[in-house]
Every structure is written in C-alpha cells, then in structure tokens.
Image 1 (cartoon, helix red, strand yellow):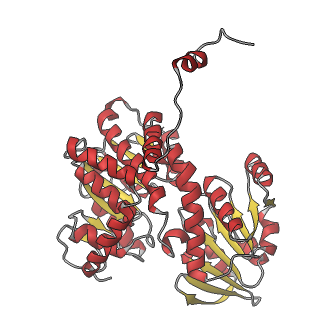
Image 2 (spheres, rainbow, N blue to C red):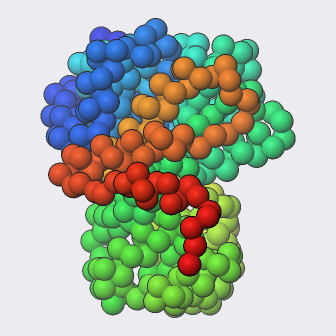
Image 3 (cartoon, rainbow, N blue to C red):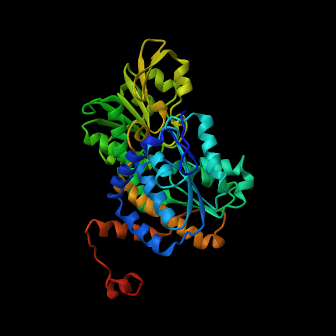
Length: 425
C-alpha cells in the first residue's frame, strides 16, 4: 500500500487526491444544514476545547464534515476507518493534507493494517471515543486496557455496535459510559430506513448493473434497515421476500404486503439476497446449497459474518473476480453464486453510503452527544444510554427548519389537559 508524508499524521493512499476530496466534502456540506448550524455554534462556544477524540467511523464526505465540526468546537479528533472497504481515499487525503486532521484509512486495507490504524487513533490517548461497530471499544478493553483508563465516555453509531456494548455492560466489563446514537429516533427512523434502503440498492446496482424489476429479492431481517431495503427494492419493481425470526416483525412485513418465509424456502427462489440482521451466518451452507444458478448475495449489516463465506468456499470448485466488487463462486455441482464486496457493507463498498441529507441528522446527534458527554460524564454510570430526548427532538426541529416546514405547538390548555386526569367523558 502506498502512503505519503502528510501535513498531519496519518496513513492515506494518495495525497494527490486531496483536491478532489475537498470538493466532495464541500458538496456534502450543502446537504447537511443541521450539522452546519451546530458547527457555527461550536465555533463560537468551543464546548470541546482540548478534548482528544478517537473516531472509528466510515471515512466518507459526511464523516469529514463531522470531524470539521468537532475541530471547530475545539476538539482534537483522530480518525480511522470502521470497515476496510468503506473508505473514500480522496476524503482521507483531504482530511490529512488540507484540514490537518490525523486520519488512518485506506480503501481495501488488509486485516493487519486495519488494526494498526485502530491503534494509531488510540495512541492519541483519547478522552472520548466515537465508534461504528465497537471495534475501537473492543480494542480498548482488550489489548489497550491501559489507554482506557483515560477515557471519560464515548458514542456508538450503529445497531451492531450497540448490541456488542450492551452485552459488555450486562457482563459488567464496560469501562466507561456510551451514548447509543443508533437509539435516537432521528437516527434509526431515517438513517437506518431511508439511508440504508437507498444506498444498499445503489451499491448492488453499481456492482452488478442488474435490472431489479421482476427479480426475487430476499431481504433477511425486518428491522429499520430491512424495512428500508425492502421498500426500495419493491419501488424498483422487485418481488420482495422477507425472512425473520421475530414473529411481530414478520407479521408487520406481511401486513406491509411482503411475502414472508424461512430462509430455507427463500433460498430456492431468490435471485438477490441481502442480509441486514446484525447476526452471524444468516445465510449458511445449507442455503448456498439450495440457491439457483446465478444467485447474487450481498450484505448490508455491519460485519461480513452475516454470510458464511467459509462454508461457501467449502462447496466451491473455482472462484474468480467478474467485476469490481463481484466475485463468482462456481460450486462443485456447477452452479454459480456471486458474492458482492467480499460480503462487507455493500452500500459503502460499492457505492458512497448514505446520502448526506440523512447523515446530517445522525452526525448532528454525534456532535451534540459528544458535547453532552463532555458536560455530564461524571454523573453517568458505565452503561449504554440513548441520546437524551431533548437532543433528539432538537435535531428534528432543526431539520424541519432547514426544510422550511413549520409544525403546531401545544396551547397551555392542551398541556394542562395532557398532564391531568380529572377531565373525562
């Protein structure tokens, strides 16, 4: 991997990409009015003055704008990638060479480089962590325990990370409080649903150039991400099939007009498979053995373990790359299964991730939650907290304002009625 000597510490692919990265960062900024308002306030108040922040996030144009907001708020951010394939190399170059933010991220970095980059951010001895998948927190709690002693709190962006962190808190091993950005309504209701839905289908279409209309698209999981993917696939004309383990979500999918069946049945008829569950081996060997010739398999969950790729390799006679982010696995019985983006996040590997207007709300929550953690960490226990409701609603209010949309407000009479019990029929 080629690197350059940057103007700030970092490990990037090509410093000459910086100019392109600046233009794309500025383009994204136009669609992030809420974060821009927060950044303007941060410039005046500097609520994060001197706070060292280690951020393990997808290195995209939207993330760059978040880093710039934190820097304007007085923070000292250091950034690395939260997925080996999600980095936009021009963005990492711009952050290092133009904006002076230490960044360790190269698209396609191998396993060892990925963890070397994680540790490079921890070498900054952070006081606050920002994570997307909890790899940074896990490293802090295992191989870098001595560094964890100086951390006062953190944030977590995604569903998968929150699951891991809650497991740590339940076992009593979490060493500092975490705000779960994913639990904010303005995150999961919009980012997970609309962002994941659009960017996942975008990634699949860019990678394959397939016509979605008329195909059987199997979506594993009907959480907020699954709802978004299923909705967008149906909008493109697909026959959408849902698989679920939760009876309530399965029932909701049925009521929303989708076919619901076990993966064992869906595997026989699907053309495209998309996993968005956050769990392991959602598509396993027996499912690969049932798939028809030409089946396409993609993952939009945080980790590639949703697809049991070692099991697919075990039944494969030959494999070869077909297109960028498309690999053909020819099974021993002659069928072809196409795996997209090595089973990693298809929306960030083969496309550009969520639109900036959606990430505007998610990263506004991130910025406000860092400010909240800085002010209140001494009162918080070593648990996972949702974004305070007043911050969540403030993000929604600012977003509506930026869209020119006004809403009603309760009158004193209505507030009194809702707070009382005496008045009835």
